[in-house]
Each structure stands twice: as C-alpha cells, then as structure tokens.
Length: 398
Image (cartoon, rainbow, N blue to C red; front, top):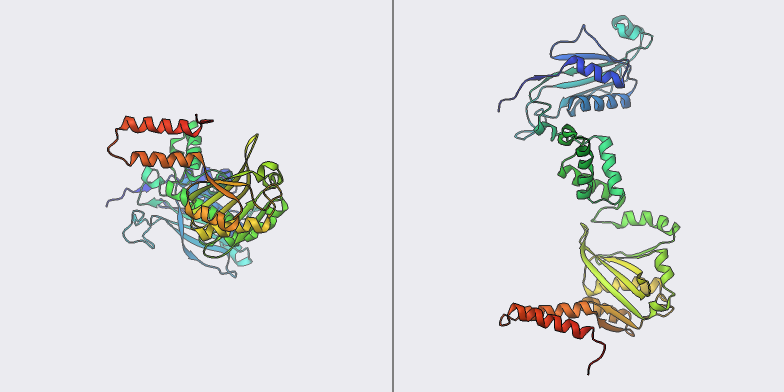
C-alpha cells in the first residue's frame, strides 16, 4: 500500500498551542522541516500529559507510549510517543501505516550546569519543557477513514458516562450526540471519532460505565452490597438471595405505602419479563388494583424462570414483608400468566391464595388454538376470536 506524505504546518501548530500555552515558542535553532522543537513552561507529568492531549486534538492524531525515562536526577519528566498508525504492536492491521512520526516531551531540571547550555532556562519564566514533534506522517491526518480511527478523548468519554447516568441507552446516546453536530453543521466533528465515537467505542464505554456503576454482569452482588447503605438511607429495602439461582427484592417507599391498603389483600397481579439487560435476568413485579390504577407492591429480579428461582424471589418478599398484602400474610387472589413455574412457586409460598389466569393470557391461548387449525379460513379465525373476546367481557349469560 502506498501512503501519502503529509507535513503539518508549523505556524498552525504553534498558533493553536499558544491559545492554551502562552509561553510556548519554537526553538528555531533545533527545528527542521520534518521536526518542530517547542519550548514551554511545563512543570510536571500531569501538565505534560495535558499538553499531549491538546496537541492530539489539534493535529487529529493519537499517540502510544514508546519510551519512558524516569530519571529524577537528570529530568523532571521524559517520555516519547509514537503515532498510533506506527507498526508498533501491529503486524497486518488497518491501523498499521508504518508511520514514523514521534512526539517527545522532556521537562528539564534547572541547575547551574543546565543553565550554561540552555538559554531558555535563563528566562524570567524558565521554559523547562522541551517538546519535539515529528511532522512527517505516512498517512493523511484529515481523511474520514483516519479520523474514524482516533481514540475517544477524556471530555467526550465523560459526556457519554453522563448520558448513561441520565438513563440513555447506547443507541439513544448515539443519536443525541450526533444531533448536536448536525445542528451546528459540524461535519468534520461528526467524522472525528475522538469527538463523535464510533458505535463500537460507545458500546465499549457503556460496558465500562456498567461495570463501574452497576457491577459486573457475572457477579453483580459486590456492587449491590456497596449500594445497600445508600438505598436504605432513602427508605428503599434491598434484599438478595445469593447463589446460582440468585434473586433480588426491591421495595421502594412508594411500594411500602401500598402494603397496608385494603386493595392489596384482594387481587394481586403478577407479571414477569424475561431476558432483561445483558445478564438475561427476569424481572417480576407484583401490582394491586386500585381506583387510581395499578400500584406496585414489590419488584423481584432473578436469574431464570425456573420454579425454584421464583420460590427464592417470593420467599424474600414473604420473609421481609410478611404482612404486605393489606395486613394479611397472603392475598385473596393471584392473577398471573400461564407459566407453570410461576404458578407452582406461588402455590408453594402462598398456598392459601387462589390463582386465576388473566384475560389476556386466556385470549392468547385461544388465539394460538385457533391459528393452529389449518382447516379453518383466516376470516373465520378472526370472527371466532372476536366472539370469544365478547364472551370474556359479557356481564351475564341468558
């Protein structure tokens, strides 16, 4: 593959850097057409790393560490980076352009000896930082393909972490962030992965955010145990059953207010949603029917939909809130779907309560039965289904 030779303009680099570093000047004695040498008043490693980040943003480049020289007797700081399109740690890869560009930052110590050989250390504001930048890249730094290979900068990473904390999913964060560039007609920013990350980068950021804030999907209980004191401080009860058939009980202050209501001892609706989040867990919610609509009594999250796992979840509620059904230890009726595991677990934990199948699942079973008969015309199936639904809601039969 042939690579285009590109030399970044010195004046542009210096002028852009001087917006952030007023005491940044070019050492014309050491600079060459292929390399620019700058002197700045960098004082420590943190300032050197920040300088590298600013230069990366200005030049549309990223850098990987090549050499680090922690010699406190000679330097305060000394580090060299290679362009991320170099062949370092790469063989045959899209990012390997065999780029020779380097970035070197040295922060010198001020001594009598160094002052004799370095005029920039004699200034009223000593320019102890020496930056050497290779301007020769073997690739175009402004092409769309190259821009999409840049790493996400720290500021954008924090923006996406905030999106996720605000409740956005990865795809919602992608659309929201892209729209900001479209509103400004900033198409260069839209193509730049350091400012507008690729989908893979965003999903990776979401995984990092999940691990930090919600814990690993493999073992979420470590993070949950850390957050239990916080939940308790706001009146939320969190209990869990920790084994391979794990279960978590969540009862908020609003749910606790619903426990003593008379409606909570009559009909309790139970609904389960499977394959939630990356852990493929099941969320089961208990609801009571009131004049203002359905009110939650408890939410249970568990590993699977097997009967024993349902029992583990229901036992957590029974153990921690035994009188949650309007002051009773069981409701009059449980209204659930046709899951044999769920119905079996309800019978095992609250055997005194009656169990009914809700209208939706009765109609769903009828729908499946009708459409399993191939000898019936399509129009007939729809007609019979409407008649069945009418019978379901009919007040009385003659």
